Image 1 (spheres, one colour):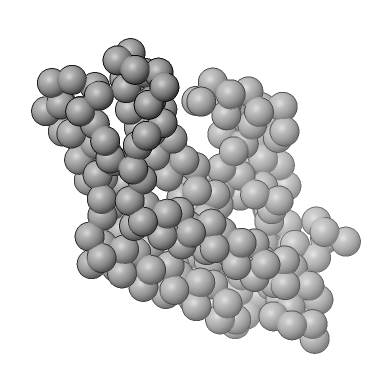
Image 2 (image 1 turned 60 degrees about the horizontal axis):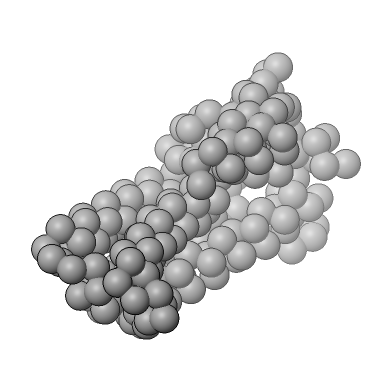
Length: 214
């Protein structure tokens, strides 16, 4: 999965990190989250199925995926879709819904994208320079939840003496899912609020989004 992502990113944007880079040629927090959960849940699911298949291939997929996991993926996918929609509206000219194209910075090239872009404002005087705390808290909650869930999966696999004994993936508590949902809501709300002022400067690495998308 890592190899495919790296090759696809290199082909798409000239960077092996392209899977994390959005249309503005900046690192995207929503894309990072979606990739993180994909790279966490899919390998765990495949590993469990392959382990069960070594005992009885006919029942390999008789594996329970808890509803909380579907809810987690739903929150992540829904957040990604809404974030993309907000970005699209932000790229519009002033006067259009959420239009802030004259205040949005974009990278000139994907090779200039930085990991720190995930935590910076998209627009206004702090575009790509100042920390957006709603993004930071969302990143922290997501990474912490992904690490603890992966640890739970590894613990389950280690304790299972027989692969066929694994009948379900670990579940998540309603509290964890609720915290993640609130975190995403705060992130999307912060993303939709207009930021005042124009970017202080543009450099050889950045330009106004109105220029990039015109």
